Amino acid sequence: MGERRKITLSTGDFPEDLKHMSNDELDLLTYEIRDFLIEHVSKTGGHLASNLGVVELTIALHTVFDSPRDKIIWDVGHQSYVHKILTGRGDKFSSLRQYGGMSGFPKREESPHDCFDTGHSSNSISAAAGIAAARDFQGENFDVVAVIGDGALTGGLAFEALNNAGASKSKMIIIINDNGMSISQNIGGLSQHLSNLRMSSTYLDIKKQIKKALKGIPRVGESLYAGVEHLRDSIKYAVVEGALFEELGLKYMGPFDGHNIEDLTTALMLARNVEGPVVLHVLTKKGKGYKNSENSPDKFHGVAPFNPTTGLPLSTEDGFSYSQIFGNKLIQLAAREERLVAISAAMIHGTGLSKFAARYPQRMFDVGIAEGHAVSFAAGIAAGGYRPVVAIYSTFLQRAYDQMMIDVCMQNLPVIFAIDRAGNVGADGETHHGVFDLSYLSHMPNMKVLAPADGTELALMLDYALTLNGPCAIRYPRGEAPDLTTVYQEDYGPINRSKVIFFGEELMILAVGKMVSVAYEACVRLRQQGVSVGLVNVRSICPLDEEAILQIAKQAKRLMTVEDNVLQGGFGQQAAGLLSREEVLLPCRHVAWPNVFVEHGDDRELFGKYKLDVDGICERVRDFIER
Ligand SMILES: Cc1ncc(C[n+]2csc(CCOP(=O)(O)OP(=O)(O)O)c2C)c(N)n1
Ligand SMILES: CC(=O)[C@@H](O)[C@H](O)COP(=O)(O)O
Ligand SMILES: [Mg+2]
Image (cartoon, rainbow, N blue to C red; front, side, top):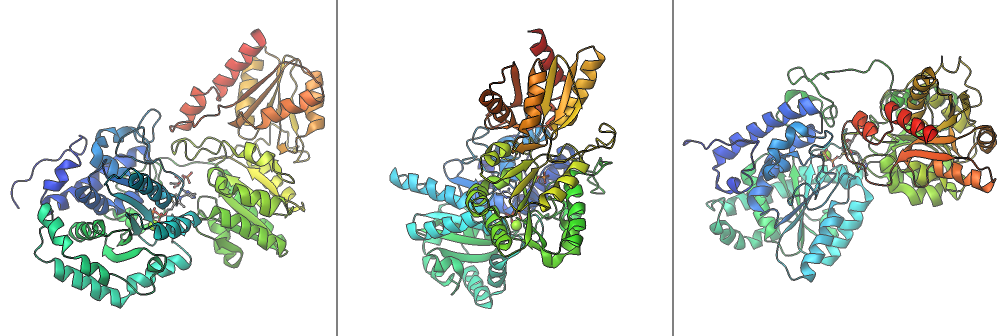
């Protein structure tokens, strides 16, 4: 190996440099990138395992394609860190996912190399097909590449796009990054199909043929393109009879070793020369190159800051998270209600269902990244006499709006929605904040919507939901659940009714869910300062506890609503509608997230910036009273 140029990952040398690097240099680069990722993500937290798995693939992509002229769309986008390094953003990694810093997902605003913002899975092929169609309209000539994981490929949207791309014949490359994993083990028939393709002996022969045919062709430069031109015939061999993609009208090539840059580069060159849509199947190892993440890729999918030597988190939470309380309660409920089943869309661990899945494997349905299907499936199983509990993050449940409305609510089926990560989630940012659910749920006829303010309330609400004969959504936030037992003096009262915590003469705060604790602290501080402010835990957002709200409003001088949802269509606006309908007139203010896509960052900083923390509530109350 000759003298190697020093590459500094924290500068903007890329991607031009790659095209002139030797194989040995590229090989060394993979080590540098992995070290860099582990060093930085261990400090900031982030999506490590998926990025460690795509180091070679991303290098090959940036060697063969000419970004930003050629467009690379990253499905979900959690695996775009290497792309960010290779497109000159290495120097931003100390601010990854921090407030004001670099996003953990592709952002058009951040770089011309990010051609499509992602975060929710399975849309990359649709977006790529659209970009390709726009290109064709304009008679332009660039390549469009969608990189989609085997997990994301379980989403129905991806199938709709494959169906359309196959028919359209527009030139695009779809790379399936197959590591056998979603966040945890991938599941389902498609996963099985990919694994059949992996095992296909017919295919292995084809691979050998291509390799043989390519021997002697240089890796880069015009001569490679010329060489590849002569290989079009080889592509014909790269057809696996019966492969789903071929049936849909796309060419299939693969599987290729996703950790062999030379093979990948060659495969991409071949794919680039295919007229029409082509699927390139690439095999990678999630967490590759770091023992801890290779052993537990699921644990290192999304990580909080950790010790890179031991792989252990730097801080641990003492109490129970809402997700854990939900999972534990469901186990209890399942013991007493035989018809109870749980449904997850590829997020068993995140939603706290791991123990339930181990205890009741027959009653746990993981349907893949398929929120719409999860909800219609729940409707079906409820229609069949069972009691499904669908656990989905608030932001991802947006995918199932229509299924909730028509399949569940219209038929008034007893489906329980356990909506995790409701409210602002912090570092994942605008694609992941669950701040719209109160608005999109509350107008669904027959739907009941509840928000617990502590762990006990969550458990009681689940008990209550199971007594109903129609749909019920319970939304709760990310992280540790507070305990309000002492605040309530152990008297929780009826769980679907509001709970008055204390009365205040100057102002009454009506708070929802997570914001009850925040408002409680603010009230304690203000009351110590002589401000007579009271607090009510709203609990039921739909239907509103009209009797309680009207009674409080009639007694109060001023009213303030506080919620971890956007203002538009949230609790505050519903309460205002009630007061207006009943002609109860008093000064009201509504504290909520503005109707914008709130940026990423530490949640404490975001709640502070938007005046939704204790200081912010105190300031707003004083401002209201003193105006
Ligand atoms: C609509 C939607 N549902 C759920 C998620 C949560 N999620 C993020 S990554 C992921 C797994 C993705 O697996 P895969 O596409 O195979 O990528 P890998 O991490 O294995 O590279 C899931 C379920 C999401 N981002 N979007
Ligand atoms: C990329 C993605 O959508 C998930 O991995 C998400 O980041 C998980 O967030 P939690 O850490 O809140 O489970
Ligand atoms: Mg995967």
